[in-house]
Length: 512
Ligand code: UD1
Ligand code: CA
Image 1 (tube, rainbow, N blue to C red):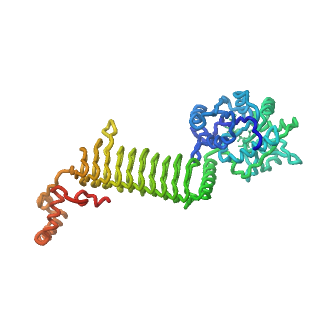
Image 2 (image 1 turned 90 degrees about the vertical axis):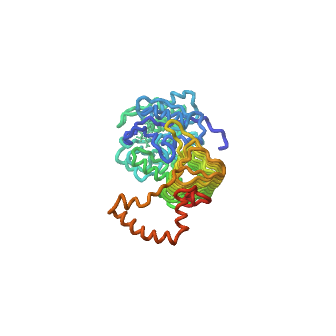
Image 3 (image 1 turned 30 degrees about the vertical axis):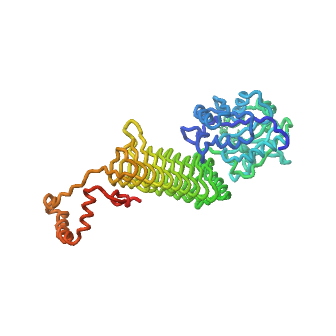
């Protein structure tokens, strides 16, 4: 716009009960892909740069106020104690901002698919024409329940008639009132003072303002929405689900057009607050929520839910769930991993199958491949954590940290009893309970020695299938001992002696 726009006041109507939602939650607080219904409406209105934003609250007022304080602290909640109609609601709103002049934009709080561009178009057309009131209208397939736009022979808006007040002829009209308007503040105030409650619902209808202004020869206008979907309201959960699908399709189409591959858009649910970079690939059954960001070329899915999670460029996440996590560039997660808040995976780190990570750093190139819980730990670079390891972080009262250095190799089935540290390049043996620090380069063995009681089964479990098997093996075994000394030496080393040299003794080869 070339000219400075007049001052603007936005009024959002959100006091209704939303009875048909059958919910303990006020209707406008129901979530829809990353925002509440009222959150969507406020964000559509944000580019108007209004001087004041007033939200009329009533049912569930405390809950709505608390939500507004979080998402739109600049908005002023105004209480409409009794819901006496949309006209009454706007009257209450304007009484709270008596100084407001210029344009008053009124929006129903339950029309979440409205685009900022469409609202901006309505307001600009209204201001350009110097109209007293402009209504957003749309041609819909089924107008049942909605206010009808009644035009005269010249196509000029005559009045808006509520469903319950329509004549049979008017009921055939498919052009409806979206519940979104721009008004000239002074002329709106004047008309609101003249509203009656003589209608089917005994309410003060905001829509009657149009008939009143028209009778007074004030210019009123209709602005038609480019797509009727934008004007859909939400009255029950079936409609909410319908809106969610429509919004999903809109969001998904926008991402595909911006260079993201969605392999199955019908099962891909991306919150409006999520960002994806070019060449990201999202496979089926994937939900990306909240402040999640997906880096360039990352591959996410199938069967992934990410909440407030950062995924670095080139990372892969398969069949996993993450909340508040950071997945570094080219890192790999899953299948079947659970990343909890402050799980931070550095570049090329790996968190594999049935692994849970919480409040921990996994350093560059380090791997936690299988069946492991990592809690309150710092793992350095290029280290490998053996399978079935537990970072024992909780003493029943406090949480403690475990620190694993760089290039460490920890054995399978270890317990790290925090606070404890494993130094750079250190090894730990399989089955160890590591409760004391391990110096750099050391091998820690913390398990009892194995004792074999020869012939125990034959003596104590005589007559069992095990005993029979042992007997058969015993004969073979006797033959084996005479010809296979190396093998039995190996066995002896495993069972009793210190593990020596290499991954074999720590169980590490089993968990790479
Ligand atoms: C309203 C319009 C109708 C339009 C439809 C679009 C009127 C009289 N009718 O009908 O022409 O087609 O929206 O969806 O305006 N609210 C309050 N206080 C009240 C009453 C309502 O804050 O006293 C709020 C509701 O919370 C809701 C909005 O106003 O967000 C609309 O109210 P609702 O009762 O849903 O209006 P409709 O009957 O759908
Ligand atoms: Ca109503």
